[in-house]
Amino acid sequence: MGESHSNTSAATPTVSALILAGGAGRRAGGQDKGLLPWRGRPLVAWVYERIAAQSDEVLISCNRNREAYARIGCLAPADLREGFQGPLAGLEAARNELGGEFILLAPCDMPDLPVDLASALGQALDTHPEVQAAYASAGGDNHYLCALLRRNCLATLPSFLDAGGRAVRHWYAQIGAVSVAMDTQASQFTNLNHGTQ
Ligand SMILES: Nc1nc2c(ncn2[C@@H]2O[C@H](COP(=O)(O)OP(=O)(O)OP(=O)(O)O)[C@@H](O)[C@H]2O)c(=O)[nH]1
Image: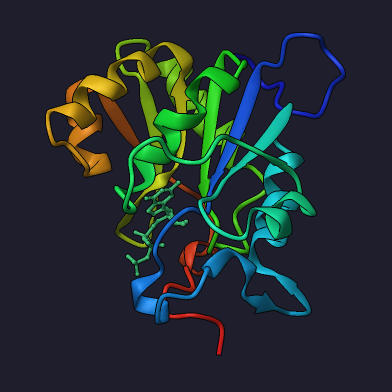
C-alpha cells in the first residue's frame, strides 16, 4: 500500500473513508451524536476534517438528519436494515459506493483521531497480507471502528449480517484482523458516547 494516503485527484481512489454516524446514541439519551456541538462545530465535522486529510474520498453513513449531515460531506446510502442494527449495517449499505482499494473506517464521536491513523494501519496491512483488516489500539483499548480494510472483504458482510452477526470484532475474527498499537495518547481515541455536555 506504500505511504500514499494523501488527497489526490486520481480517478480511482485508493482509500475510501466511511464515517459511521448512523447509531441510535442510546448512551447519549437518543441524540444524534455526530451533530452534537463540540468546540463550536458538530462532532462529525472534526472527524471529517481529520479523515479527509488521510483519504481520497469520504462518505458519511447516517440514518437521521440527513440534510444536516449533507452540509458536512457526501452521504452514503442509509442502512438497508431497519432499527439500528449496528455499524456493520452502515458499512454494508455503503459498500458499493466505496470505490477505493482500501476502506478507512471512523466513528463520528472521536473528534481528535491521530493524523497518522491511515498510514499506521496501512503499514500493518502491508506487513500482514494474510489479514483483511487492521484496527487501532491505544492504552490497552481496542478501537475496532478505527480501522483500515481491504475492499474485497466487504463482500462477506451481507452473509455475516444475515446470519445474525453484529459485533465488529466477531466479523474481524472471521476475515482476519490485526491490532495496531498506535504511538499516540490514548485520549485521542476518547469517544463522546454520553454526549458533549
Ligand atoms: N450506519 C450506522 N452506524 C451506526 C449504527 N450503530 C452505531 N453506528 C455508529 O457506529 C459508531 C459506534 O457506535 P456505538 O457508539 O457503539 O453505538 P451508538 O448507537 O452510536 O451509541 P449507543 O446506542 O449508546 O451504543 C458510532 O459512530 C455510531 O454512530 C447503525 O445501526 N448504523
